[in-house]
Image (cartoon, rainbow, N blue to C red; front, side):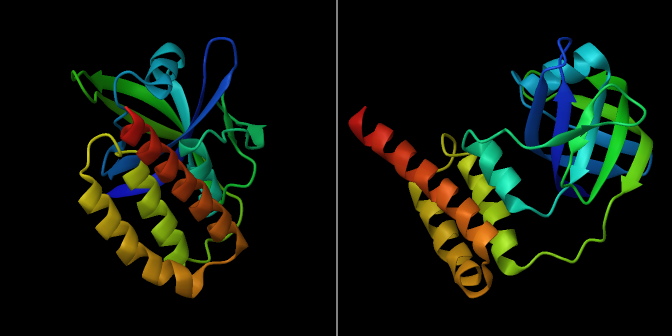
Length: 188
C-alpha cells in the first residue's frame, strides 16, 4: 500500500528538508523510494534516519512543491531528526538497507518510534483534489498537457464542492505553479 506523506530529514549540518512522498507500507516495514538526485535520499543515506509525517494540512504538500518549505518542526524523540509540529502522527524510522536503482532506489526502513498527536478526521474531496493536483505538478515535465488539463478539470468538481480556506490556498499555489510552468514552456 502506498500512503501520501511528508518525509522530514536532516543533513549532517542539521538543515531540515521537508518533502511530500508516497511511502510503501509493507508487512516487514516501510519503504521510501526517492528519485535520484534528491535531498531526501542524500540525507537518509548520510544519517540513516527519517521521519514519516501523517499530515492532513494539504498546504504542506502543495507548499513543498511550490517553494514553501518553511513549516514549523519539533525535534524527534528517538532519532536525530524532526517532525512537523502540526502533523497528526509521526513515525521515526531507521534505514535497514538499500536496493540501488539508477532512477529510484528503495530504502527499506524500520519504525523505531510512533506517536499519534491527534485523531484523523478524514479527508474531504478538496483535500484529495489538492493531493492529486500536487502529484500532477510533480510530473509536469513528464506528462502531456492534455492529461494534466483533463485530470485538473475532474479534480475541480470535488474541490469546488468541499474546499475550505486551507484547501483553496493550497490549490491556488498549485495553479500558479502550473501557469508559471506553462508560460516558461511557451516562451522557450
